Image (cartoon, rainbow over all chains, first blue to last red; front, side, top):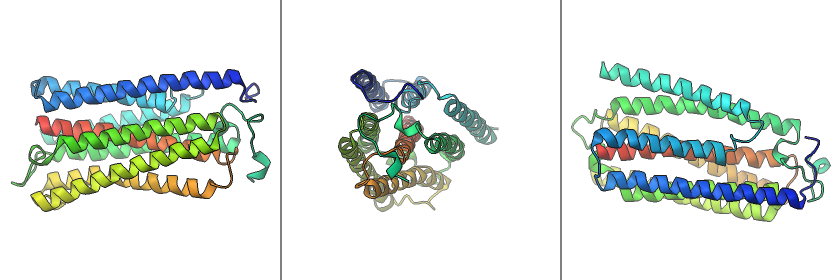
Amino acid sequence: MTDNTNTNSFQKQKNKEEMKKQLITFALMIGFTIVAFSIVATNAMDKMFAVPLLLILALIQVGFQFYYFMHMKDRGHEFPAMMIYGGVFAALLTIAALVAIVWW
Amino acid sequence: MSHDHSLNPETMPQEPEKATLEGKNKFLGLWFFLGGETVLFASLFGTYLALRNSTAGGPSGQDIFGLELVFLMTMLLLTSSLTSVYAMYHMKNNDFKKMHLWLGITAFLGIGFLACEIYEFYHYITDFGFTFRSSAFGSAFYTLVGFHGGHVVFGLSWLIALMVRNAKRGLNLYNAPKYYTFSLYWHFIDVVWVFIFTVVYLMGKVG
């Protein structure tokens, strides 16, 4: 953290470019949301295709949220990534177990 | 404490939220907390998935869910996620007033989301007689969605407390981590909502 004093114009420009990326991310997330809702609203697809597709759209959107909005793509986010992936691992086990109990 | 860290645009570090040890610890601590929250919400989602067809003769998700309201709620929360990104952008440029303005918009959108959710529950209870005690599906639904709503209430209280407490302090290295950790928490609420609108409402409507 020695080289990071001064909000100079270079840094301001960098922040601006970063913000542009965030806006693109937001537009994509809105797009994915609209696609997901219209799949269901128009009954365009069979349940067998619709459900996995909805889940994939949700995963992509959450990825954007974590990596761009929450900055997990930036340097110095190894610990956050470890925490979230650890949480996701436990989450998948939990959901798999609870769903399996009922399905059995 | 806050006085020895006061900032002006010339002394502003690039990442004010992580410029002090305290800030770094808050940053790590909040991510640790979010990892735990992931597991907590997973158990609620797992319970919901297991019980969503146990309607005990009462209304099912397909009968009661309305996509229009859920779409509106999704847009409100997603936009509030973007406005808090804007707030953090202005924090990094050391523009305290604009940061507070965008946080205010975030709070406003959050309140809009909450109002929709309260209306939604009211509508289910009065028009369909669908309550927490109607069926296992009812209990699982209100626990999962209500718990998320509770997180929104907590997030809003956090945000308003932050804004009121720091209104006259301006931005400094002591409170920058506080704003930043709030924004992470708020994004996480949106992450959970993405799965709620997908798993509960959209998959519920598909059947």
